[in-house]
Image 1 (cartoon, rainbow, N blue to C red):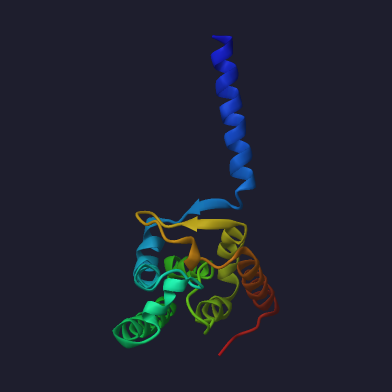
Image 2 (cartoon, rainbow, N blue to C red):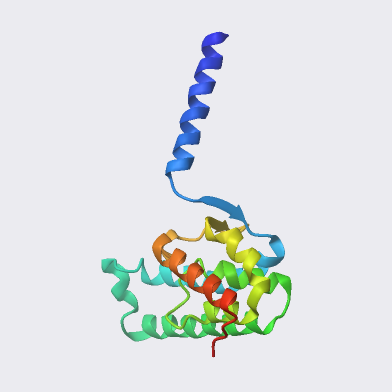
Length: 170
């Protein structure tokens, strides 16, 4: 019996070390927030599924023709989804905009601007997700749609600093 306990201890200890060295902790997004995020993140996932991972050889399938048109339509819908989310002035929308800052949603920075414009009420969410990766219930999104940790950290730091200074974005 002592041997079995030792085995369990070693397995648990190694599992803990692996979890600590794999990267940041995860936070499960509340369902009300996840429901706001899924339409936007599903579009991003469709792009990866149809067009391939960014930087990979099969990414060319959306470089021209009908694939390109579908990709452009998805990007337009992502922008519309962020604008719609920004128009909602609820705590769930506040949190959803911060969670979107963990994902690549285009070059516009609309999600970051919306967070900054909402001001101090976004700070608790920025601190909640700054050191953790969000998990969206009922979905498994490709890691390639997430911002890399360096870009995410920079974006969060910019937003926190701007909010503390009372800045607003156009």
